[in-house]
Image (cartoon, rainbow, N blue to C red; front, side, top):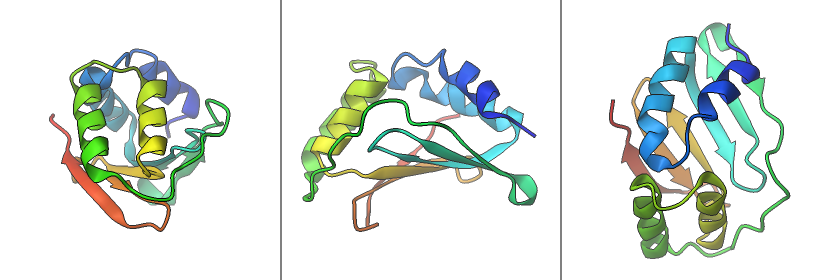
Length: 129
C-alpha cells in the first residue's frame, strides 16, 4: 500500500493548481482511491483499497474558516488557482476566507467536491485526466 511519504513526494512537484491533474494521476497509480483535506491545517486522510487509510500531519498553523460561504469569490479563487496564479497555501487561505472547510477528491469519479463547515457541498469540479 501507499505511504504518506510517497504522496508527499508526488505533491512536492505541485507548484500551482495547473499541476494538480498530473499529481492525481501519480497518486492514483500508487493506489489512492480518494482523499479528504481539511482547510483548517491541510491535514489529509487518504483512502485505498480494502478499507486502507492513512493520514498526513498538518501543513501549517490553523486557519479560521469563515462561517458564511461566498460561492462567487470561491469560484474566482479556484479558477485563479487552476490557472497557476496562486500557490497551495494561498489557495487554502482563499478557501478559508470564502467559507470552504474541506474538499473530498474521488480518484474513481475523477472529481473534487468542496464543502462548507456544515458539510454542505458547495462546488464540484471535474478533474482532467
